Structures are given as structure tokens and as C-alpha cells.
Image (cartoon, rainbow, N blue to C red; front, side, top):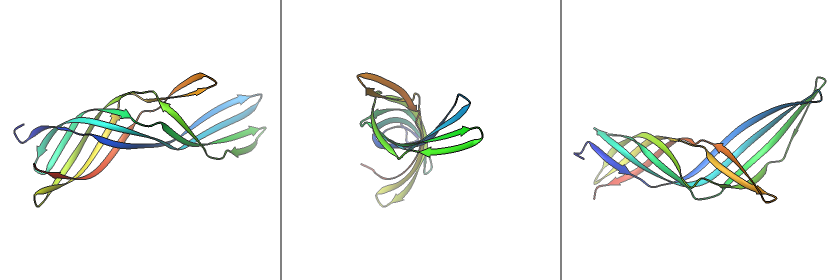
Length: 172
């Protein structure tokens, strides 16, 4: 659109990884329990389709726009559980072996907003592109598992991602 403002659609295959730690404190019969769950790796794949409004200034390309993220795999989680017990001032600690589980992702599509910056360096008849983008999902990823014919659903996390990319742009 006039060489300065444009529309830049993309299709990206994403491998999404996250790790986090959650704490739960309970007090039962004067015994204080602390359950610490550490998720070492929470992984699923998605196809992300952003449509950017781009504004070009010299060798820089500023991008902003919505995207849709479509999960294309189940979520695999590797986690460990640590239980700390304090009874009358004595603390004991037990840690489970790492366990791996797979759950279904209930979301058909997750919408969000992305913005970023590209830098173009000319190389003969093409451009070497350096870029960075930040992605913000509008809603959390919802996963479910079935135990004894009962379905359990929970919000896992809301994805925030910083992407760094390198690519080639070829003028057609």
C-alpha cells in the first residue's frame, strides 16, 4: 500500500514449551504440609496465523496485528511433586520421580495479539531478515483428561511468547 504501509499475513508452526512451579499449603491436625509441584516441561504444537499491519521506515518494518493459534497436538507434561511436612518444628521432605502425562487441548482456536519489528539487510537480489515479536494470547489454554469416565478440565496457562527469527525475503 504505497510502499510504506502494508499487510503481512504469515503461517508459522510453533513448538510451545512452558515450565512453572505451583505451591499449595495445608494445615491438617496441627501438621503443616507444603505441596510443591514443578512442571519441568509443558509442550504442545500449534499453527499460528497472524495478519500484521506493517509500517516500513528505512530498513525497519514495524508490525502489529491479531492472530489465531490452532493447537495441532496433545499437551505433554513432565512434572515432579515435592511434599514438605512440618510437625512440631521438625521438617521432612519427599520428592517424587518425574512423571509424564498427556492431556487433550480443548481449544479449537486461541486468539491473540502480536507486535514486533523486522530489520532487512540487502544481500544481492534478496534480503536477510532479522526479527523479534511478542505474542499475547487473549485466553488461557484449556486442557482436559478423563479418569473413570469423568472429564476434568482446567486452564493450564495463558501464553506470552517472545520470538526471535531469521529469514530470507525474495522479491517476486
